[in-house]
Amino acid sequence: MSDRSTTRDEVRRRSGGAVMLAVLALIAEAAALAFGQPWLAAVGVGFLAALVVTTLAPSGYGGLTQQETAPAEAEEPQEQQPIEFRVPPTLETDVILNSLADAVGALAPVVAAHLWLEDPSSATLRLVASVGPMGPAPQPLPLEDPILGKAVTDGSAVLAPLARVHSPSTERTIWRFALPLTPGQARGVAAVDISAESDPDGMQLARLTAPLRAALSGSLALHVARVETEMAAALIEVARELSRRLDPDEVLETTLSTAMRISEAATGSIMLTDPATGRLEIVRAEGLPQEVVRDTSLAEGEGIAGWVLATGQPLLIEDLPARPKTGRRHGVRSAVSVPIADADGTLGVINVGSRGFPARFTESHMRALETLGKQTAIALRNANAVASSRELYFDTLKALALALETKDPYSRGGTERVLSYATAIGEVFGLKDDQQQALRIAALLHDIGMAGTGEPLGSLKRPLSTVEHGLLKLHPQIAAEILQELPALRKVVPIVYHHHEWFDGRGYGGGMAGESIPLGARILAVADAYVAMTSNRSYRPAMSQRQAIAELRDKAGTQFDPTVVAALKDLLSTGGDRVPQRERL
Image (cartoon, rainbow, N blue to C red; front, side, top):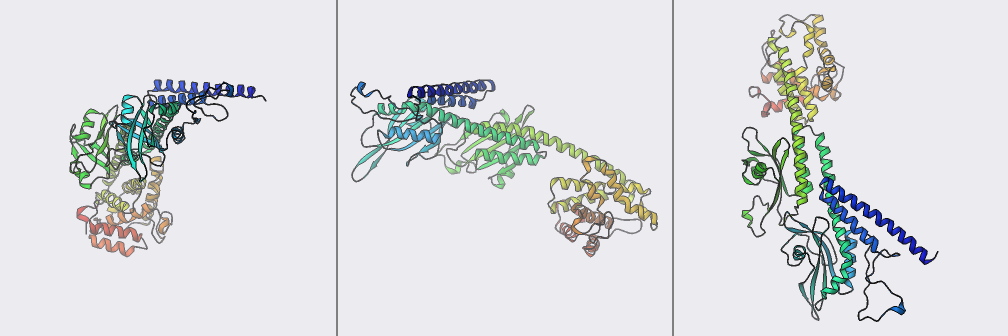
């Protein structure tokens, strides 16, 4: 195939790729206008930069030479030997920066090439990437920086000395050449640091780096798009996670961990308004002293969080670098606060803080946290609604259980005591929330099957007949069959059905023994027996607490689970929060 034919094929391929990149750029820009997302505009700029690279890059290498080579006989003598460099057909930051270093390296030794992005919210420049043996420190730079900041604010290239290097034989100066970049709505700067014995030629530097400016802008735009996309993906994932959380505490825990992760903060807290006082109180915190969490209380408009609550607007605060440590709040020098708010109002504030200056918090972080605050408000309202409905449901079941107690004067008050002990023991064993809820409902309804025995057997002053004994042993099965008809109470059924099993297998229900008996049933058995023994009956007075515990310990290993008996004894001895005061040993 002839060289001319090969060239035509290459041109056609290059033209097709250019058309595709142009179309993608138009789509991205249109999407940015339609959805109001700045990062989509940055993606469009990235495609345009790739279009420039694709269009200008020569075949065979995919790069661009500074000057096309003419036939030898037509070439005129020139004072300066042409310097060849190439632009790679990629927008990867490290590759582009290495190309920048290679291009300028023809003029002087390059010690570093780096790329920076402006963060308008903090008026700083943030390092995106660097290559070379003497790269800059990763700390943000203020826009007042005389080289990088000046290039961004003035919109023109800047060449200035950075440092002098002395050696026994020579004295060299490190010069910095900065190029302003404007990818979409963002602003940034690319810089190259060179080591020279004499003043470098600024015009030559501009000529060498000019073909790379489009690729550098595209690389910066690609970085912005990637950051925004990663942040959006994280927020989508946390939205899914929050939608699955139906417990308010889990919503708050998920929110705080997400806020700390996406902002890489040193401290974080969630403050909610107290319904009674309207003041902000810390309900979740990380990295803050316990006394701060306990004592902090802010009125609307008071402090940073109070201002955010009052205005409904996010706030990014950068402290002064020279401010003494004693003037900082808990060592935090930079902070972001965003409202937890939706269309129905503001519920509280999310705070994250950094102990470094300048912090790495950017406007992108603030926008992401603001979105997280909106997601949290919706999830928190949903979780609170579910919690309220659960409380209403539980209160309804409790009312039913108390109504059943009225048939037997000797059992009045017993249900609430069984509920209290069972709940406390369940917490000792670390039951999960759904298991604890099932245990609490079982404690309320475990004797609902006694309604099938007719006259309350506990109030009889005579011995039970054989039939009455049989009915008494059937009450767990009757209760289980009643509860089985209610899908929401399916987890309660095994606890109720097996709560009269014996640990040695000689009880009734299913003939189970040991740890094969559901833990909830073993807990309920001990709580129910203790309450029964310490309550008056028609045929005997109530036992004392010590007598009842002695009886439980005597039956531990045969009728009762020894570990559950020990847990109840410890609760009564130490005064667990849910144990009635009068019952403590």
